[in-house]
Image (cartoon, rainbow, N blue to C red):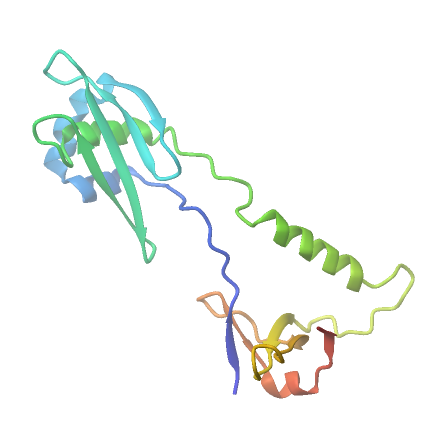
Length: 192
């Protein structure tokens, strides 16, 4: 029976939105009122990876402090807006902040993979890469996975084995299935 392994690497949230989403989140009436305040936005900035902040000059003498907090649950992004105006949440000032924010999307880091993992993988590739001039003996189209197996026993006698085994193509969820019958035939790469 195949065993499912996750190949996903958690990453920082990527904030990308458009005008339609602003309308979906705050309503067409609020967005229509916000258009006259877009020019009044100042100090527009990203506060971390998922919060857009700035000041919006409203009808009072002091500008309102406005924040838009982006949330992403099951690939369904939504925004929660806060403002120091009397309405205080999801108001026209939040919409006014989001509209010019379209041109100031946050830059994402090149990689959110921990440097220790990258170092380990590079060491692994170097150790097991074929030497120059040697002939490749594996089938060109065989996908392999590195699998860790912890054998049962007391906590003092458990063993960690690493195997290289063929896998099926990843499914839409990003998971792969290990072909257990082929895995039984595979030899451990390392024991330890």
